[in-house]
Every structure is written in C-alpha cells, then in structure tokens.
Length: 166
Image 1 (cartoon, rainbow, N blue to C red):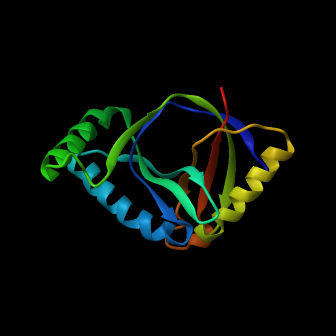
Image 2 (tube, rainbow, N blue to C red):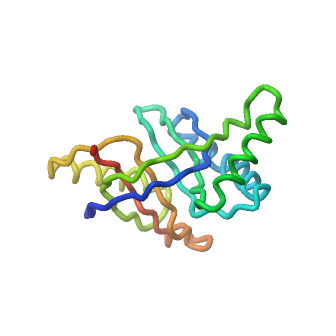
C-alpha cells in the first residue's frame, strides 16, 4: 500500500475511549459519535472532523477512541461543556467523554478508498509496507474520515495515519 510521510499538526480531540471486541467496533462507535455530537452542539462548536484512534489491538479486542477534532477557537467552549456534563452526572463521569491534546508529530499516511468493512485489510497492508521499508511506528494510529460517500460507503475515503517516533 502506498503511503507518504507527513506531519500531523497539534490538535485536540473530544473522545470516548474503550476496549471493545473487534466484532463490535461499529456498535461502539455509532452511539459515541452521537453523544459527542450532542455535546459539541451544546457547546456551539463545529467538529473539524470525525476520527477513530486505535491505541492497541489484539486478535480479539481493540482499544479504540471515537473522536471529533476540536477547532482551536472552540476548545474552551467544549471544555466547559465537558465540565458541565461531569457535574450533571455527579460521579465525575461524562459518559467517558474526555479531551485529549496531541503535539505536532511525524506520521505516515495512506489512503483507503471504499467500505469501512475493508479498513482492516488496508491497515494490514499499510503495516506490511511500513515494515518492509523498515519504518518504525508509534501509537496511536488514527483514521480521518475525509468523505463518507454520501450514504454509499463504497465511495468513502479515509486517511490512515500512523505516528512515527520523534
């Protein structure tokens, strides 16, 4: 799989992270995106893009975070909305919603065209190509949903990013 070396800019994400069985990824992601979208709307913020971050994967499970990129100008409002949600629950939780900040960093990027059901094969090809070229990688990886295909997932475009050690 072809890839290019790039730099991922510093950014903040609103996310919900959990370890889930591989067969239940979409079941986990959909309600997470809905909860976060409601929180972003409450904050008056627009997402700069939907993503999924993977922190680790085993043959059975994946440590994954459903995420929205927070535009810099909306960070304070989203932080306030998360704090209010935590106060509403009384136990300090906000449906496991958190804000994570990433520094600018080097990454390898490949493009997946087509159904989300085929993303695993693209990640495998990407990993194999990086290994073949002797490129060391770091975690997390993430998917940036560039074009959802307007209801036709076979037309979807997803950028795949793998951080590289500094």
